[in-house]
Length: 104
Image (cartoon, rainbow, N blue to C red; front, side, top):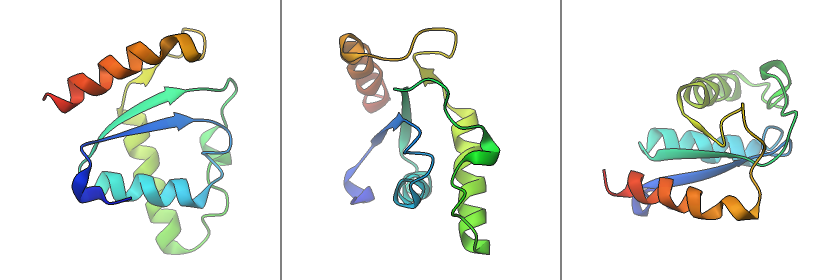
């Protein structure tokens, strides 16, 4: 992903996202590139923090994991955890959120 040409990163939260080192690395690049992050919950029962990116074992990977987890704690989730997970009918709402972030 060429961070220089991006303003917003839409992150679809799934169990696989929290296990993928590639996703962790892309999130790290997005944070360092100061992208706006839009998180979209697409699965129920996402892994707890201790079970996220368990393959991050080097010191560099652990630091990256920590920084990404800190960022994810600070952003709003769509839909909020009090609501059902997202489905295809919610795409317009995600589009609106992205457009607002682009127009900041």
